[in-house]
Length: 226
Image (cartoon, rainbow, N blue to C red):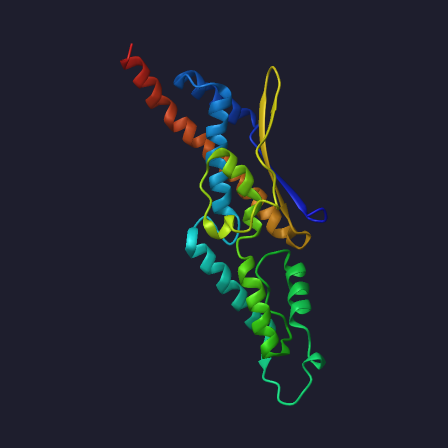
């Protein structure tokens, strides 16, 4: 989305690079191959961190949580009214009200407003049915990159296609390899975007920790093989 927020996950941190090089020497794999392996782990973690998934909820449980949050938002915003012989267009538009609430929340869960709106019950049901299939759409920006790396993607995220993000982008020079994957968040999700960026940094730290733990065992194995 040209008007959206562009997110980039870059694996070019100095400490992470150092660990990748050390692992490359220990395993005999090329630095490029080792970088791809590390990037695959990072992108898998990032998918698990992007809402509705979280550090605690993954897979179908995350999908269910996303659908539940839609219903919860409706309850916070609206009081359903069954119309009898009244024109539906005379009542507030729940779609516009919900969009405004999402903009104010920056993509996070909608806050409970001071005033609830009486809205045509049929329109609320229609809005719920419109929003439910979109669960997982923000995480779909990682799909193209994940597929290029061979990282698994849940079907309920992959169903949204690859239009919201980039493929795996690789830039090589004599001294450095940079791999990146770009995700596009909607402009209404600025707070959620900032939160996800922090989780991307966490995923990088987790990758450094994983490489640090693996290296001693691989080096010991190499010594025994001499």
